[in-house]
Length: 275
Image (cartoon, rainbow, N blue to C red; front, side, top):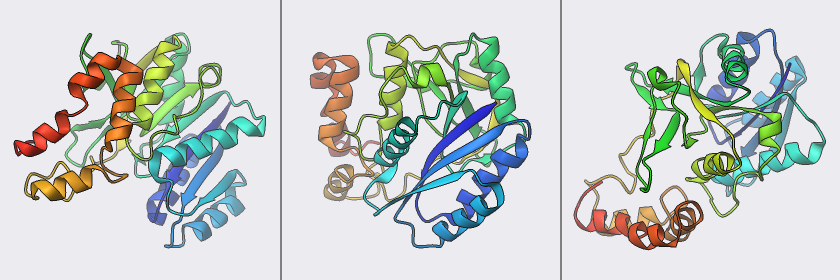
């Protein structure tokens, strides 16, 4: 069974290497192919990828100039797969900072097949064993969502964090790649909602696929220790929550009314000193 893995990376060569090795050697029954978007790394990531390809012969590297960030990098990788003519059994979207446990992709395939070829979102835990990322469910009529636990693996999700998402090819090929409106954040949530609208069923895995700590708050626009002006500035950077992208996300997925109601909520939170 062939699995095509797509991820984007920037200056974390050891984690990139660990991700690839763990997936291949931890799931020996599967045939892996990788599309890795190396977005301007300067830490020897290209050398690491070349060495790994010399060993495993299954890695395609796409080089960026450092301006792609997460969402545009994933879009570049998905476009590359779509143009290749390849039709794997599954597409696996991952973040290379997930420290994968053994046999997890094999187990995710089993869960997908047992749920009529559903999309399976690999739940991850942090260094303390607490849920960090996974499938998310929106409350009806709101823009509020929560990440579902492994114990809630029978509840359909609305969308997902794409730290580890296994998508059957027929579902992957039924919708366009990640929306190129997004630079860094929101691309994966938007993509998951597009799959849901296309009729895909999405579930969180009934087990943790590996360790992945949540991104730190310190130094970001969420950091309440920063001045309001600094938080406003950081919010509009690619790694923040740019207004244009946020309004596009709300309008596309929840309608104009919700976009008007919630589009400026982040600014109000900053003014009130909230996260």
